[in-house]
Length: 406
Image 1 (cartoon, rainbow, N blue to C red):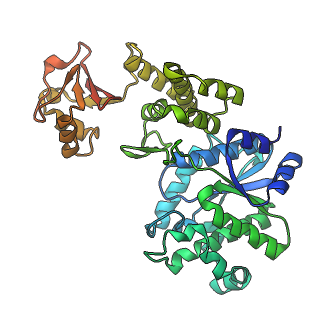
Image 2: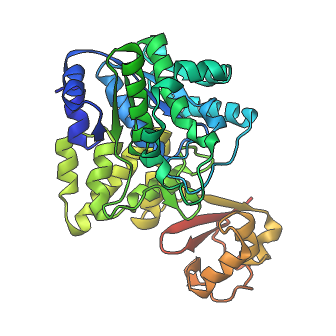
Image 3: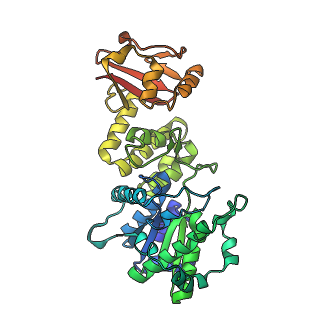
């Protein structure tokens, strides 16, 4: 089975520039390909996860990946799917984010012995001569064609700046540059990048009269079309400091039944026979499939030990276990044992504000020990704490915290 068959069976592939040629190429040859990542934050998020998994499957099949970090394109910002212009980032912020990305990617991609390459497009984009770029690349782009691109359509009403209009040219130049330097012949990426990727393919084919290809993977969405990876705290990050392994585990443990097969196919390496078996479970039994999903995905992102801890914490809370050591912990000083509940929980970032805390209490959504809190002015008291000086707090139906006196 070629990697094309693997990616097809697991549901990765959305669009291809030259389907028959790509299929034959991946069956018969080992190629160099790339995926670009703009460093707009100091952590990858779950939206990058599918692209990393697609890259990993390609590498496992013997193809060489280039991770292209957007030190240059990040200075402009991709308008694809955006209602307004992205915030401009400083070079220092971008450089810091690139270092964070490199560490996280090494969990998915093997960079040893030249098996994969990391490149930064700042190395060539920031030193480009504008007139030379117009002469070398600009002549190959039709403005009429660019204006029909899906990535620009959302911006018509508010206005698309010329600044952002150049992004497609920059991304196409990246592909051409990687083609020149490394023999890269294929770009992979999310389906929202289709227009930009196609432009790069066409640039190489026109400028070099050589084959080049692109293939998109579908975006991570729920069965009813909503984007996955959003939590009440924002994005689902791959950095343990931004989204704890326990919260990460719980996100996948609580996906809808209809999303289990899709997530197992795209976000784990489980054989497809096992994926289909787990996804076919009905009613209460589907929870076993969700536990497998949560464990496998957390193991990939955070390592086996953190996945085990998250699993044990969840079992302790929901499966009648007793070990709460790995439940998210809020440490308080002894003098806070009589403080206002909402003061302590807001300071610990359980709530983003006291207003949010009061709203949840008014809705009966905060439980302290075994009692639903009804008074927003209620205080803690030493008698609430167990012998080990811990106290279990529940926010909503499924978010648990262990308050512990230092």
